[in-house]
Image (spheres, helix red, strand yellow):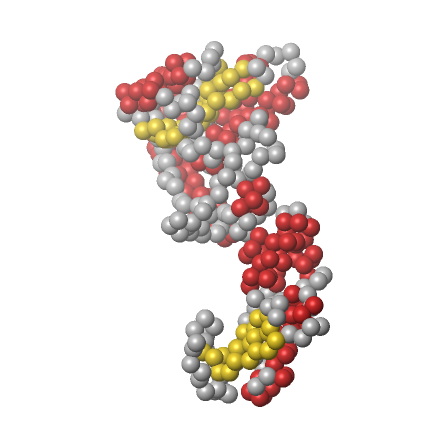
Length: 388
């Protein structure tokens, strides 16, 4: 039994009470909760009538019975009451599992608040429910965590870094490729989606636009295989595979798919009889000759140094020697590329800065349980847990 200490009336007092089926007990202490030391004790047995009280009534009686206890209890006008955490947890569990059928925090709070009250009740309920494994696995996250974004490298010239993916529309499957600098896109029809057919289509693009330094694509087995890896190694290409179910890391090609999908729908509404392969070609031409919002130039202009025309060598002057054209083309291309690279880097910094204003830093402790969202597929059973 702890040794009693003298009271210090300049310091706050702490009252800890408890009740059983036969008696009541109270301790008045001082110090930091958890390491506080008792000043006086008080206890008494319950009368026959009091023994019939409900549990919560007995707990309340334990708080107020001290008017018949030691004089020191009656001299203290203000004190901190230590709550019975176990009973709070039992009440929350009863309402959350039973009456509210694992409903959300607000609804559980409203149900409990009708009959009970304790300080910081909402925070206690929130902490309890957020640790419930069933709720964490089965319920959708209405306000998911948004970790801060990192600033990635910005290319300085065309064909340094390309993205590729597969795009299916109207029964046709195409290998889509987009240059990260110029935003110039290609959509190559595939007879099949095997690694060999994809490698052949990729090599076809190399023969026209040149060999890139880096390729980013998703981790689909159609790309992440021996054939594609060996072809990239042969040409000295650094290939990067994104993590599964994370389209943000392949956002350039995903944005292209979204834009080209709109163009295709418009084309099909106005050219109903045209085959999808022809519509796709027209759509890609339209995309490459539209001013891109990121670069503020057309992709065709950035890649080839001039706008598309019937005569690729058409100039502003009636006569021009090839040597003069090459020199001016080089000077113009370098100036434009430098301007676009700076504009892209500035735009990226602004987007990331705005996005990171609402970001939440995520830290995990060793041994902490972490739930990961189950990937959504077409065959997902909606009755299965959302997280695991």
